[in-house]
Length: 133
Ligand code: FES
Image 1 (cartoon, protein in one colour):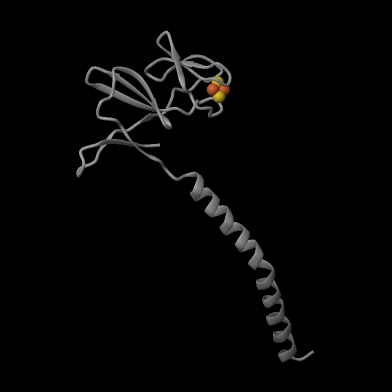
Image 2: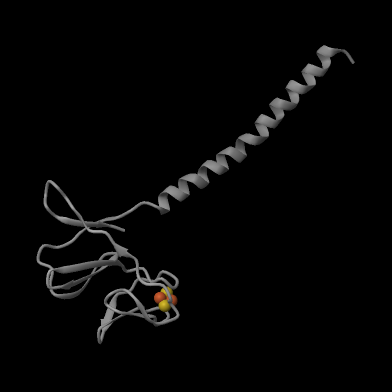
């Protein structure tokens, strides 16, 4: 074997390794795109004429108590079902019956974590109050 032949084999092996790795890189990139799609946030504008008490709106639960407004994600902290009802000062998950106080704290399991409270933002142009879920 001479030196030229060794270099040819190495370069051939590198090309083969490059060809084999292309599908793996493409598969990895698809995974990244999927991650981006699931982490996209939704912008929700709160209504100006918000009524007192609890309002279910899209993916959020709004609690208005006088001038105090709190917004929670309506995603149950147990397995993510959408909380869409209230009764006797409690928010109720339809899937497994977890109950939360109007402050988002778990009262009855199986959920043990509080609902995610969302930060309120004010749109400088429109003056609307918005949250991101
Ligand atoms: S998802 Fe809400 S209690 Fe299970």
